[in-house]
Image 1 (cartoon, rainbow, N blue to C red):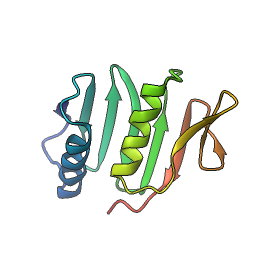
Image 2 (cartoon, rainbow, N blue to C red; image 1 turned 60 degrees about the vertical axis):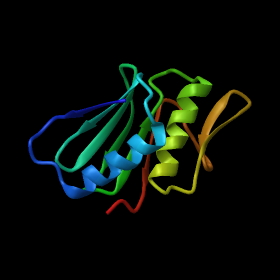
Image 3 (cartoon, rainbow, N blue to C red; image 1 turned 120 degrees about the horizontal axis):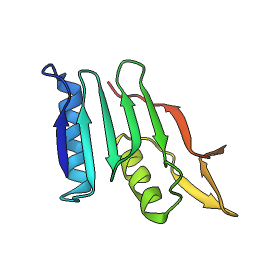
Image 4 (cartoon, rainbow, N blue to C red; image 1 turned 45 degrees about the horizontal axis):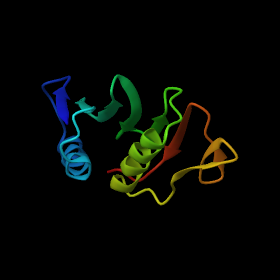
Length: 113
């Protein structure tokens, strides 16, 4: 896993969530976490799969059109780390997050601070 700082000012909360994500994903080489002052982005290869915005308490998930089991597992790992009680699952070839359909991206509210 690679961590990239996009700004010199990183909040304590961003550092905290980065550490939690790093612990959860371990040494996976195909994942990158980009740190900003008040947000994080998680990349699987070159596709951004999660944007975690601490100012608005939102998590934006995306699959980049890659509806694979591995992408789904990584999205669910992000949700578990962020203490979200929902999961991405598939039913009849359609992705869902809880009760909502999940086509290529979805945004949810979460208590992040």
